[in-house]
Amino acid sequence: MSPDQQTQALVQGSQYWLILSIAAVLPILWAFTLALHFARPYVIRYLQTLTLRFGGDVWWLSYILMRDALLVVTFALSVIFLFPNLYMSADLGVPITAPLAALVLFWALLAKLTGDSDDDARTFRIVSILLVVASMLYIIPQVYGVEAGDQVGALNSISTSLGGIPAALVSGSNPNVSYPILNLSLFGFAATGAVIFAWFLRKTKFEPAEIA
Image (cartoon, rainbow, N blue to C red; front, side, top):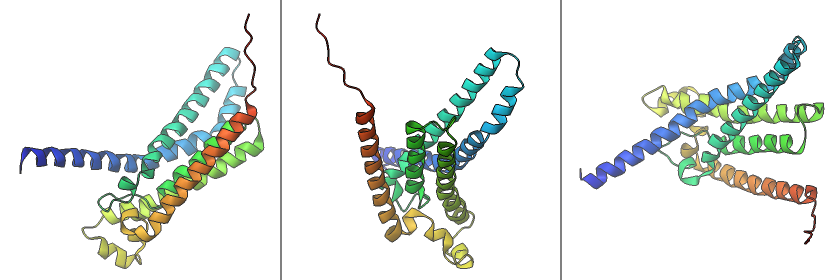
């Protein structure tokens, strides 16, 4: 093997390792994201027991920072599945509905941006439903598709026992379904981005510059 081939193999192997590591760690991030989101009632009950106002403010701001930061990190890592060369690759085991999970998570962030999920019960319910749906869209195909297929030496053996479920839940093994899902997700991101831009223009107040 020539030095160029060794370098290419090293770069490609590092890329595959990074993508598979992100795909494997995302269910943990999803679990922590849901836990922190639904821990809001517990945090509020705990704040009511504090007698020092400064301590309560620090606790609440720390909770908000960790919750929203984890949500943004989960979204940022989920965006990589929108790249066709990674999502459609037959060598990488990617959940087939991973782009849809990123899209629904983007909608949850949009709901938090346009509303107040901490003070408005309706917005909190909307964000909660979107987060649960997004986590299911990622965790279910990751566990029963990618991870189930990795537990055996040959994918066909487990596919036979599970009725072809693992292969159907992996993007590279089912291009007839994964390609429309990717296009639908990209269109959803574009439409949502247009809605955010229109909302921003509507909320922005134009103030003419005054020259002294």
